Every structure is written in structure tokens, then in C-alpha cells.
Amino acid sequence: MHVKFEKWKKHLGKEVLVGISMGSVLGIAACFIAYFWQGIFALGLVVGLSLFFTITIATTIGFLIPYILVKLGFDQAAGSDPFITTIKDVTGLFIYFGLATTLLAHVM
Image (cartoon, rainbow, N blue to C red; front, side, top):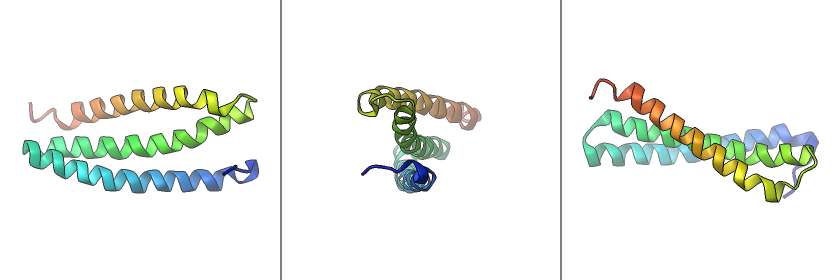
């Protein structure tokens, strides 16, 4: 599917909603799994929230990077994957460690 440049905000909104819905379902599942596995609710919360935010950001970036590359005149197919993967991985780690530091400080 090709996104017409004049309707990109509508498509971005849909991608964000997809990310929020996927992140919610997977984040809640991961939260319960981590909690029941380790018995620490704060750990389950860290894992669930991290997954929620990472998935939401990944879907948003997965839409924006190709759009930006096309607007700049680059081939979005060849350039998107390294950028999306790197940004998603780095932000996912920062989100996880930031939440772990904040929410698990009282556990340790």
C-alpha cells in the first residue's frame, strides 16, 4: 500500500493506534507472566510497560522513517531497516533500564 503524502497524518494515527493496541495486549500478558514467574509485581510492571512503550514506538518509527526517507529522496526500502532496528533497539533498552531503575529501586 502506498501512502499519499497529503494523508500521512491519518495513516500515522492508525499506526500509532495499532502500536498502542498491540503494546497493550502484549504488555499486559508480559506483566502477568513476569509477575507470576518471579513473584515481584514491580518487575512485571517494568516488563509490561517496557514492552508497551517499545512496541508503540516501533510501529510509529516503522511508519515515519520510510516516509522521511522518501521525502528526502532516498530509497526507503534499503535505508529503513537499519535505522528502524537501531532506533527501536536503543530506545527499548533505555525504556527498560529507565523503568527498572525507577520502579525497582525500592525492591533492591
